[in-house]
Length: 153
Ligand SMILES: [Zn+2]
Image (cartoon, rainbow, N blue to C red; front, side):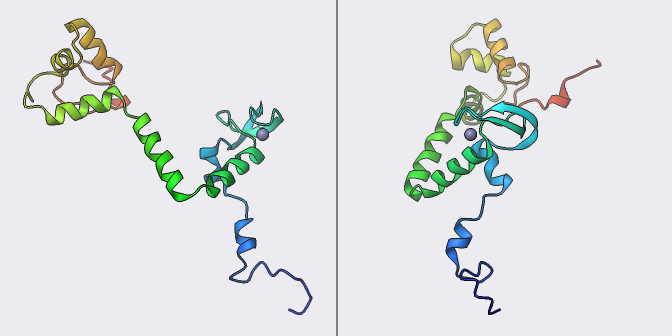
C-alpha cells in the first residue's frame, strides 16, 4: 500500500483490468488456437507459428482478436448467428431420426424406412443407412457406437 501504483489491478471494480485479461486456452479453442507441437502458417496473418496443435487454424494473437471481436458483438447478433449455425448443422441423419420418432410404422427396418423417406431403391437405401452410421436392419435410428462394430460372430 502507498507505493503510488496508479491502477491497482487486484481491487474489485477495476473493470478495465478485468476486460483486458487474456482469454483462457479453453476460450481460444473455438477460435482456432490450441497449443501443441506443430508449426503452421496462420491463414489470418500469414505468420509462421510454432507450438500449435495440428488442428489449429489461427495463431494465438489472431484467435485473441477473433475472441474479442465476438465479445464485442451485441447479444442479439450473437444469438442470431448461433441459431443459423445450429440450422446449418442439421443433417440427413437428424431428419431421419426425427422421422422415425414421428412415424407410425415402427417395425420397418431402417433400410425400408430409408427407401420410403428418400425415394431410393433397396441397395441405395441400405447404403444410405450405412452412410448415416445406422444399422440397416435395425428399427432404431440410434447411431452405432464405434465399439459396437462386430469383430467376431
Ligand atoms: Zn495469425
